[in-house]
Amino acid sequence: MNFTADDASTRQAVLDLVVEKGPVTASVIARILKLTAAAVRRHITALERQKAIEVLELPASESRGRGRPARHYVATEVAHDKLPQEYSDLASRALEFLGQVAGDGAIDSFAAARSREIERRYAPVVRAAGTNPSARAKALADALTADGYAATVRKVGSGFAIQLCQGHCPVQDVAHEFPQLCEAETQAFARLLNVHVQRLATLAGGEHVCTTHVPVGIPTVRPGAIKPASGGINTGRK
Image (cartoon, rainbow, N blue to C red; front, side, top):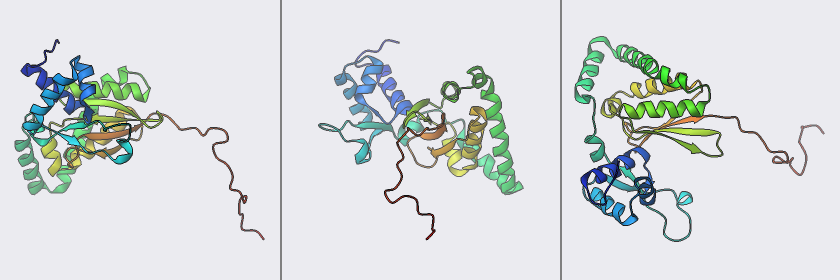
């Protein structure tokens, strides 16, 4: 798709990228959309005025560098509210009624059933990617994006782990009231990727993105990296 500097579709594309890849800088958006930095800044200014995006304050250790640190943008609740919510109000009322009629155990059973449904839905795509956890996570992210979750995979640390990030959650409001749904999704991801994953943040919990930590390798210790203490090992013997 070709983008011009000022059309409405370009502004939506900028917003979509912030939802999908946030926190993200204007220079990254410009590179992906093949626009000038000035054109992207115009759209960012307009989106900030609409309160659709905001600047994420990064820790000092992550924003160090020469000159003024780059501004990283994330989507706000205003932006998420404009995206599809899969009849979240109706779903929330239905689950609330289920809990009143059948107790909390019924909601847990519903969450477990949803976990199995997520696994069945994405298993063929993930299996086709092979056995490598990174490839499987990428396939899962692509499938989630097709279903409206704006998912990406990001490398972290020394390459021994990745993060599966979901910039949007169609059932965010429901999951806020019923966190069992987030846990069910996490369990499904673990089974799909065949590794122990850890949910670090959720949109339902007030964060700007759902983040799942996925280990993809076992760290090895470089020879000589660990040195014995100068006094030797204290065995407790006299």
